[in-house]
Image 1 (cartoon, rainbow, N blue to C red):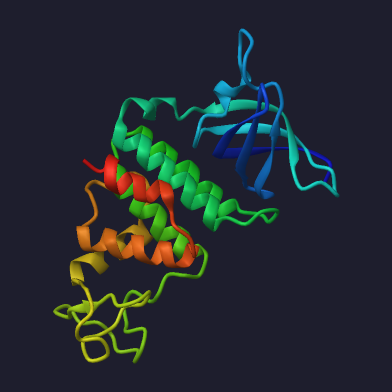
Image 2: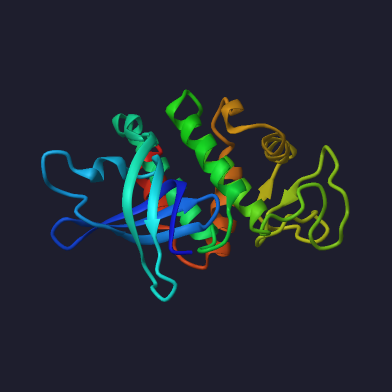
Length: 242
């Protein structure tokens, strides 16, 4: 590819030189595209205003076949995330969501399902959906689409089906029956029912915060799958969750 236009979600921005920005943008057809947005800062109408974190945009991009970085020629807003900036929790959740997409989305590969998920999460956060619910929903679906989500109805070790009264151990990344992991931190049947309901429903249907044990489990397997510290997620848990 050389010159192309695609929709995108802004996942990361970094000031570069005097007036430029370094951007990471999730596109449905080309996955994550990283590049320079030149002369984006300064002037009477700075173009950087369109490149707000998690905003949905339309991008005109030049990518030389031998270059590591693309060049963003124009970025036009479709749906701005500016409305999230008046709410601390939504602001920190938006940063954590963008970080998760950046970690779990491929560069240079089509990512239409992940892109549609990101747009749905943006719309949910701009509405009245629980911010922590939207974050947990994002974790669930990115883990599922990336192949990191363990079975939710049976033991990852012996394959036994969970009963309605089972205490499910969340030891490691998998879920285990009490016979296989009797002393691990536990999830209840209600936690698994929440996850199953989210697999069947859009994020706009999230009406409450996830149970604390479920959030801790999703954080742990997200962190393990990422194989690095998720800084924005950690910041939200410490400063944005109140």
